[in-house]
Length: 242
Image (cartoon, rainbow, N blue to C red; front, side, top):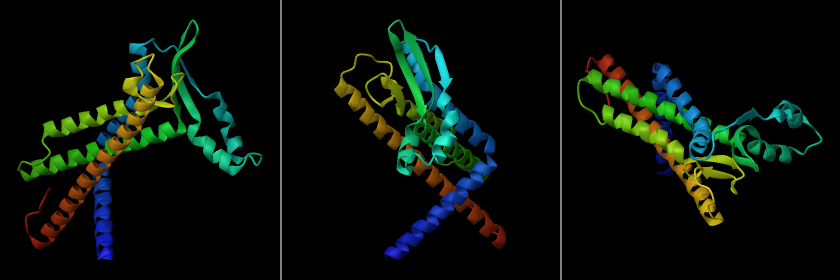
């Protein structure tokens, strides 16, 4: 019984992956534009919020130490475990704003941040490419479906706004990461900052989970439609579409 369930889940996953690949290939422009836009939002939204709510950004830089990174990674003088632990927290670049007493605010993008941003951007791009493919198939079939234009746009908007609850690395705020919406506030109690950090982590996980489920479901639909169309063409029957 367990083996049958695992085999069924494996086949469903394979069908979903095949459908995702077909939809992304068919709509590369949609996928690329959506992924690039989502990545830009993830990187630029925190300094934009802080610039509007607190003080305009007046400094941006790439980490000058990055030129030494290859030598550090292959150095035999540093234990391998230390190098592995160091890499995720390495700041790649940061935005900041100064005040007469020092740093007003700063937002850094670490290796871990960038990987998270890329994963979310790829998921978001795949979701939109799949949604367009399913919508087009429904239109070609000449019948209504569960993905109306309004529903797709609402889902896309929800996905974009989901990034605004995601966490980012903040310098000088008393917490390693905070949600974007919390960056505009100053003078928060330490307990509130910890709560915002926890909410941020949960919200990011929720966005990843919802997008992953949506991408998997649409991928399965697209592959099921392709298989039905192939069977219909072989047997002279009308192809089925999702």
